[in-house]
Image 1 (cartoon, protein in one colour):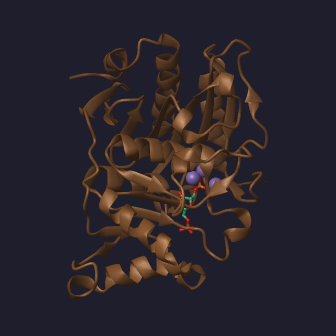
Image 2 (cartoon, helix red, strand yellow; image 1 turned 180 degrees about the horizontal axis):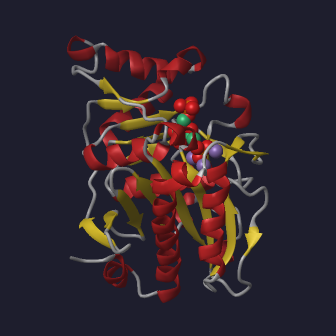
Amino acid sequence: MTDLAQWLTTQTHDHALASAVTSMAAAGAEIAGILQLAPIAGQTGLAGSDNVQGEAQKALDVITNDIVLNHLRTNTAISILISEELDEAVDVSSQGRFIVATDPLDGSSNLDVNATVGTIFSILPSAGGLLQKGSDQLAAGYVAYGPAASLVVRISGATSVFTLDADGRWQQTLAEAKVPQASGEFAINTARERFWDAATTGYVKESVAGETGPAGKRYNMRWVGSMVADIHRILMRGGIFLYPLDSETASKGGRLRLLYEANPMAWLVEGAGGRSTTGRQGILDIMPTDIHQRVPVILGSADEVKRVEEWYRRV
Ligand code: AHG
Ligand code: MN
Ligand code: MN
Ligand code: MN
């Protein structure tokens, strides 16, 4: 079996970059252990504080943020950490060549029901500053804490999948993830239908019309409510994920965050042959104006994403 360390030597000659990925993988392994025992350890419920986006933090949002910070602090390759749970970017090492942006615990509303949650990360060159396009990413990944803990990571080649073994090591279980070009599964929070724009409404209507509708095939809907879990399904068997700009989220620019949710996921999905867009622009082409900026997110199987893009051109 190939482990993460062996794989990294095949993906980059930059040891510092490899060490940044290794630190996030180590944080993920530690978080996997914490999550397994959290209900016994009493690490449940709210932390009693809000994050900068106005969300009530869960105890585990705070704990996992601290774990990531502790792993990065000891790595001199890291200059700055940007986190969903930290108002401001945090200085790590003055000589560090890499910025890490993270969602330390994605899908934290799913903790109470023991559903899959995750940790997402994006690695950027320090030289580019805090606000860089997703296309400038040097690496990105996530850990999905499900029945198995899966690390999905991409430097600039293939998107590769690792599974946490009993000794806490990441073993490669899929060398190259491939998002199928076509799919019959879409993921969107349909309870928000009344807020949708015409393109989203058009795409979903066409899909639920089934075999005799304009899409000419039958669709299924899946929505875990953890972006990591929904994207992991799409990376493994295809589909499309939509959190579009809607009339309720429009004033904020969308629901999901560009630097530590949209960009890393777009990097991974595109590395696996999928496609990503806001509807009107490629996600990886957006020049951020704020570290916590929100953005519409549509990504997954290329044919489906293209069909949504056609809707945006039409309406
Ligand atoms: P987070 O838990 O990091 O704040 O992210 C939650 C996000 C994402 O994981 C998911 O896709 C989305 O929120 C779910 O939104 P709804 O509550 O509208 O379903
Ligand atoms: Mn949150
Ligand atoms: Mn999230
Ligand atoms: Mn989060």
